[in-house]
Image (cartoon, rainbow, N blue to C red):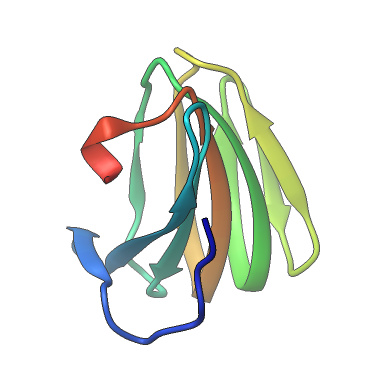
Length: 106
């Protein structure tokens, strides 16, 4: 499966946060998130392992009991069922891989 850049297809996920599934296989799914400064990602947990990369902007990401400020080029991994959330310090773009496949993101 291939995916070419396209400005269409972004879906509101939460206030100030949009997501777009870029490509997926049988076991993984790649998503781009556009995050607006000042709109938090509330702490939550889900069964999916989540690996991410900050393309642009600046966020403060909390995973479990640990919190870090991230800048472009930083990456993270969130095991399934671990609580996490973020403060969006600047308009940001992140890409994340979820495994197993998230049917709710198709």
